[in-house]
Length: 77
Image (cartoon, rainbow, N blue to C red; front, side):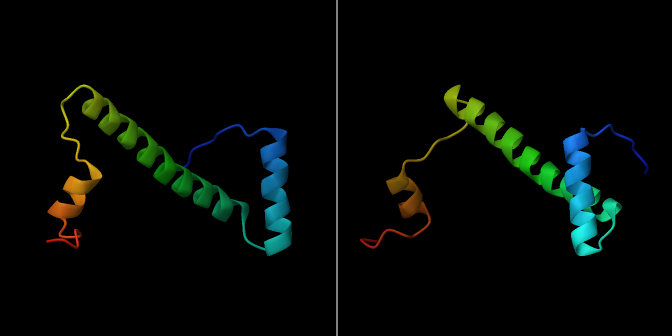
């Protein structure tokens, strides 16, 4: 799939610098940026949704002691 997005002059220059210093293609770096950025966005938004569910009482929250006990990490068990 081909997608076109406008880049700021600064972003374009930074990518071009990487290309010139490493010999990798611009497409390589753009793919890397999108894939890594997607992982970060997924982590952020999924965590924000889980936090909202926890704050509203829709998601169970465990204390550190409960988590350690449930995972058999408590040395006193």
